[in-house]
Image (cartoon, rainbow, N blue to C red):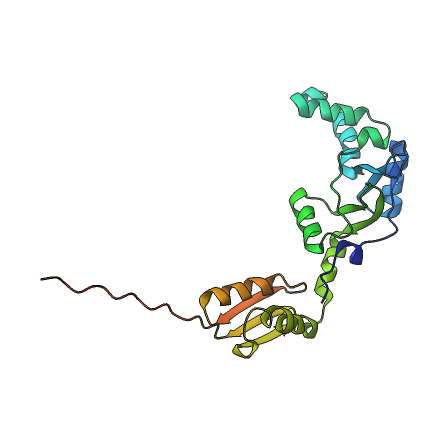
Length: 225
């Protein structure tokens, strides 16, 4: 099966704001669209940043701080927060550069980006940086919609058959959990197969039940007299 890429699961009707969109309109559209962030586009349709609820909340946090910004933040963080607090447009408020994905990136790559950068969705851009879609956490979970039969077929025909003798193995898939049994020719082959199966799209976990060959214990030389 072809590996699912971002373009297979992304939304192709992304909601966005321009760099000149006002604070008030951003806040209203966040509520209306029930999302937590928008990509921000320049006049050429290129993504220049992302404006989120957190970016807007800085204004409220700073204004509510009795001691002013100096009592809340210091140094560079102080100045960044003050700039956002003073902002009135998306260009002032946005976080830039945006964390983006490409349409041909794997879904796993997008998931790692979201996890590592702690974001809920990614703008999808073409090679020129223009917005063509949005991929969310819910979208990346689409790979787990594959049936157990589809997963097993890929494991048997594309993973095991390409690297080992299929008759040596038994594969059972239940709710995306793979139970792998058999007798690999070598321990290295067995470990490699288990690792490859973990990366098959839709696999939730792998239960490694392989019987690994035991390396012979080298004999020790006898005593010398």
